[in-house]
Image (cartoon, rainbow, N blue to C red; front, side, top):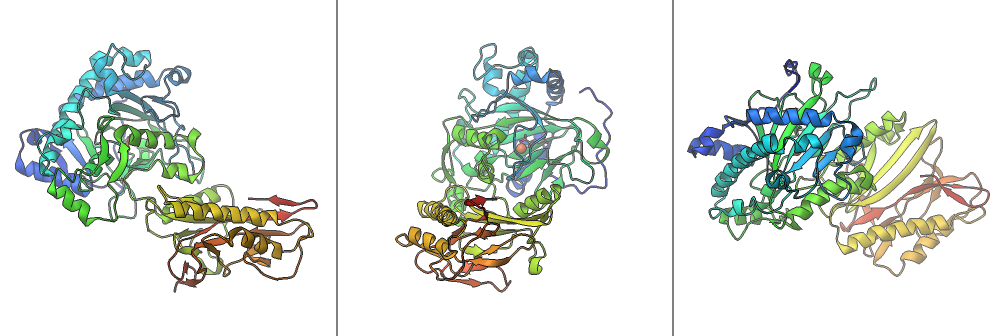
Length: 563
Ligand SMILES: O=C(O)CCC(=O)C(=O)O
Ligand SMILES: [Fe+2]
């Protein structure tokens, strides 16, 4: 490493202490050390590792990383990982999203496949820059060999503690089977922070894709979201100590007994922020063909854990290769279609909470010199409405994590340059069942039918009629409790737009600006009731509801969709 005198980690930022595990003791199968490892692996899924014996190899890897990252960007881009879900190769800063709103990451990666390092000079998976090739044998292969030994020891020890027949986990990580296992060098250059704006997260909140990660870093920046805590906490780097953590594959194999915890990287704290941050990880991932699922047939302990958590799904139906490629692909900013792309990059973590969506949207709106209209409006406490499943409208963001199969409407209104702009859409979280997908599709069709009924001289009641004609023979009903509304310099004003069959008078004229926002409900009962919070509107029978909204302007010749 070229910079020997890095400033110390500041002592005034909160950190989360990890258990320190002694590798020599684990290797010797010391029972009390294995108890502590078990505690670390099941409670947080992170621990420090001392006496690992890899420090020299790690230093040489950092030298190789420095040589490679200082190549011209054009040269590095010849080895880019691409957008198809392959991880190996180079990833430029800004190629990935860090959150559902599509903010960009600021870390460069160099990922070298275990398969390439071990088969060198034969190419197994892909080609690398000359600086990597030159050190494949002297630097990369020894680092990978030692990392493999360490992770394999952990696989054996955890295998026994999980009550699995000897060798079960090792057999899922055979060194000769191609896999996503790789060594990753990460460089994060100091962030140029705009005055008054918080710096972006450098590497977005995630769980690791594979089985075990063996991490070395010099500067702070790694943070974990400890279960039950509301804020992220730094993990302080300790010289000579690696940081180990459990990934999704092990969490799935163990039926959730082993914990794959959320973590992220932010700019280093305090004086450290002025320096390049380097980190190095070896990721052990299962062989490409291995199906990711709980090993219930192999261990009564795992079978019991799965039986106790029926709400969780440990049957991914994916091979390790598919799981990995899906996650890598959907993080690439070039593949981003909307927040759903980010959701599709998620692993075993409980989903993002509606509070975190609220916070991200709030920050985004303020960063663009606008104000979130709902915040403080008639005492509404948040910046957006998030209405999940049976909530028709006006759900208040909270700490409920999104779950696989949810549908969620996100309703955003901003105030900018004296005007309000209002729109909403219902998103699918993970795998939504057929009926749920049909509900969301029909809701969008209803919105389009409503828009098509608009134009100068046309009756307002035509909107409700068009939606009625579309939905009358379906299994969905239309809520008549909530209406669209005129909008402009005020948030809500006449005309009130009814989405159900009605006989209200009035025709549209150029300059009229209003929202159309039908809520459709599964089944024939469209009635809802309001929670004691005064806002949240649920369907009476808890059937699911979806909503879609645009703000439109009547023009001389027709209609313009403004959102
Ligand atoms: O750089 C770090 O400290 C962590 C990197 C990480 O979490 C990852 O690459 O998955
Ligand atoms: Fe990670």
